[in-house]
Amino acid sequence: MRFFEDIKVGMRREVGSFTFTADAIKKFARQFDPQRFHLDEEEGRKSLFGGLAASGWHVGSVCMKLMVADGQRLAKEALARGENIAVWGPSPGFRELRWIKPVLAGDTISFATEVETLRSSEKRPEWGILQARNTGTNQRGDLVFSYLATAFVPRRNAGA
Image (cartoon, rainbow, N blue to C red):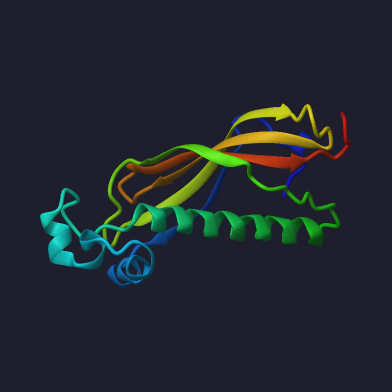
């Protein structure tokens, strides 16, 4: 992962994609969101979604999994080049969560993150604060998922 000083507003990272199969949708729904339109194809067709729909929480969980995996890949590559690894801090939260269009069985969602704002932390000079828009886009190019995340990012030179 990058240090605060290496990040610029507008930087974009494609973090991966995932195909939501009917089996995966139902498995997640049974455990975490057992609503009829996530569990049964016919109920999904009769709903506003028009088909078996993935839970929005499923979409968000996949996004998080892909973001973590991509960060681990980037850290491993940087370590192989002999670079120092920036270990990011926790996230104080997110805002503007939107499930814009349904994710239906068979849809492949590609996830990305783009830096929107950067600022220094006044209380913790060793950290910067980043806000990034995380999105999911289906195979037709439709935006289906979005949220604005905040994260603490370590500074290479504390107080700089």
